[in-house]
Length: 367
Image (tube, rainbow, N blue to C red; front, side, top):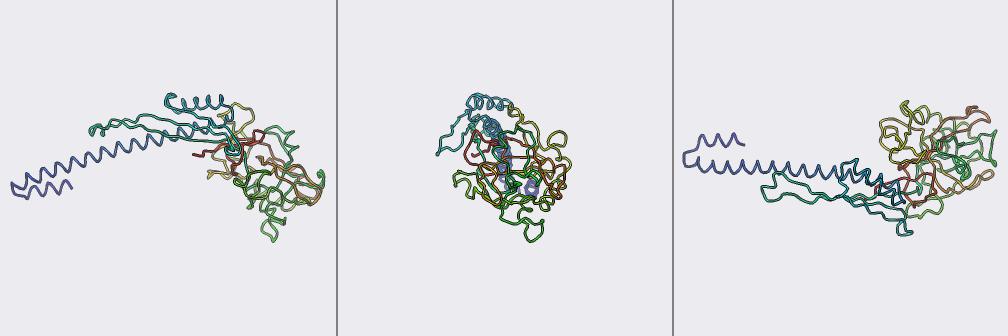
């Protein structure tokens, strides 16, 4: 554009040259002003994005301490300092659980700062107020799909500590009340994966397609059954197929419970012992870089019944698929063992109503 103007100047008569020089000067000035304003706008948007990321991080960290007000405020301040946020610019509001209008405790973080301009000062605009906010809740799982069609009783979890091994499926040598603990979540049928009746095997290998909800959950949050039929019998073939596929298809980098190749690591945002965090590169609920199929969501049931009957799902628990029992999965042997885990993360289930007695609560941004 500038070259064209200069070329025009060289071929214009003297009277025209003066006029065109004025126009060219104005045009170049406008271009320079536009470029300067673009820099100011870009800096503003970058500042806003970084501040919003900080607000999100502070709210998520603080929400893990809910419903305790003192712990929530202390954590919010701690994470504000970590993110370089001036405490005087931040307002933290705790909204307690109040059923039914507020099903979950909330924490709202607002940050207000002045953003100074560089070039807009020439137009009389020195700065603007920049305000961002983030709200996070702590909640218990209402239910969802993707659960494994095994089960663990409330009684068994009450006696377990975090990180402890728990039997998720018994074998015929140690059968409990006529059941080995598999459930019909996607319906009846337990043949080998790929066969005509593959529902149990497929759900165990990939997670259920059907939604199952915890008993008593408001249907607004989870609209599905809270009862399931048991799958009586040892289910040796389909169980072996599905569990071996989970174990074999898990990347080596995510093949252990914790450690260098562990799926879980200590959660640095809480001082509570036994609370873990899923490593981001091993998280099956995210688009992670490694394939990890040893993390299972298991329905917690009220009690096992005798034979083929209905059981009630009262909650959900997270497990790391530890191993097949010592006898393997042949004949009367087919015990599946998992390690009981609690995390302060969304594990792919629907948010419901916060229950302080739940073994797995998770936090989530809601605004």
